[in-house]
Length: 246
Ligand code: TMP
Ligand code: ASP
Image (tube, rainbow, N blue to C red; front, side, top):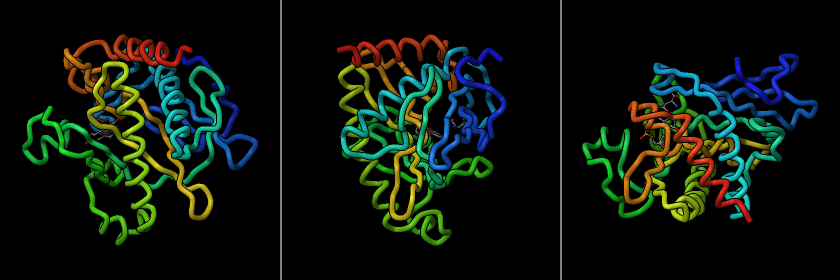
């Protein structure tokens, strides 16, 4: 497998997801997250290997998580270890996907019969239960509370933090001529009474539409067969790095 970085095979794999592997470190409070080159959609039903995707996502996620942290939302990222490896705080992931939307697209358009591209009058936060077998169904607070997926304060915190993240990311992408349509966040528990923004912020879990052209610069390129995902992601990374340059 053409996977550079810090893959040794001798470490304890704690968890393997569709796009990342999580390894134990010498410190039980820290993990190493390795970004893979796999692209999946429709809960893994569609799969491809896209050379360099892991590295692009690791770099974009690090840049965005830092900006979010600077804006006062604590994240799991401690530091970047290598081209596709992050040292992160070892959290217990809340089994809820937190989606923020600025524009109608994707499952919202399908579920409620709205046209993709309709601007929303305010940013909308939605919760989905993280379960591939159930296809991540949309849920309300009552479901999370009744089934013990999250406490009331956690739902309130995630909703608030997601809106702050939306402001940071909308401004960042907007500065690059890109419209942040929607994105997904995950949070993790780190000690009692403390949630950190976890997982990743990447074009895998965001919709990014180029201003003017409406071109998709995100995983919809793969989901909808719109072009070359690897080339699209590299172009996006180049724009992010140009914005990072002093
Ligand atoms: P949706 O329109 O399919 O509900 O997706 C909303 C946003 O969440 C979109 O930017 C893609 C992201 N997302 C994920 O990151 N993981 C998922 O499993 C799903 C369904 C969506
Ligand atoms: N994240 C899910 C998958 O990889 C769904 C999606 O992004 O479309 O299958």
